[in-house]
Image (cartoon, rainbow, N blue to C red; front, side, top):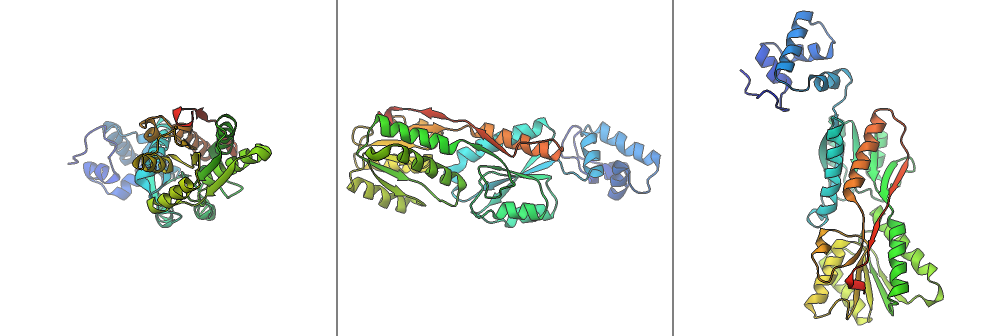
Amino acid sequence: MSNIIPGSRNVQLDDIARKLGISKTTVSRAISGKGRVSEKTREKVLDCIRVMNYSPNMIAKSFSEKKTYNIGVVIPMDNMETEAPFFQTCLMGITKCCALRNYDTLVISAERDGITQLKRVLESRKTDGIIITRPLQSGNMEQLLTDMNVPYVTVGQSTDPDAVTIDSAHQEGCFELTSYLLMNNKPNKLGLIIGSMEQTVNRSRYEGFVKAVGAAGPNVPNKTVFLGVNGELQLRRVIDDLLRNECSCIICGDDIICMYVVNMLASIGKQIPRDIRVASLYNSMYLDMYSPPITALNFRAGDLGAAAANLLLNILEGKETPQETVLGFEMLIRKSTM
């Protein structure tokens, strides 16, 4: 006798077969309508599914249409603890949207630009489509998905010109925040710290900064730019260098870099904004806890996730979808730059 509780989503073909005293193959054939199964047996199987209250339509559809009703979500696992807020919020948006449209989500971990687990999931046909939450300059994941003819959407700009993308207006936001700092704070020396340039989002942020500096004309202050900064030791050397050069305003590429900057400045007795101003090109709950509050760009990770899921599900349903969608941003001007 099956131990499955009616209404549970954990019902498997084995449980139905065991309850009816028939083989799993017979259950599968009865649901799919393919193969030699009597009408009486088919009715018994479908009646059993209804009694156990497990969305029989989804089981039947998954077999007859060869769909899994799963969406794979590729989440980067390097630096996961520090980057967790964005990806958790994005994943929550994806999950909620998928649930509303009768899909489940399968999390696929990725180490930097590794594709081992993604390839394994694709080869075992566990998903109908993929959402890449951090596209990289290498484009390895997009190439794999294209080669295997699997629909996908990227959260962020992709190097694949044919990719369907959903992104925030990072370049425009970074342009506006940098322009604001140049016009309203008039720093004597400006510093910029950005992480891995393999991430397409960091390239967009840097491009926004460069455009703002270019638009400022001949009166732009001296600037020191550090790209590809990775790890606490390297960050310490960068901050030391900026302080030796009497930098008056530091723009941090994201919230994690900003936390390191703020904590290090506090450890050596530097006060924000009296001694030095600080801003971040990405806001998160971490920065909301600091005093003074940090000037930052706010992007809606949950909305990005939900939009990505909607795009992918529309593709799977054969609906027309835009190739590129861009969401807005909010510029939070706080005491750290006043």
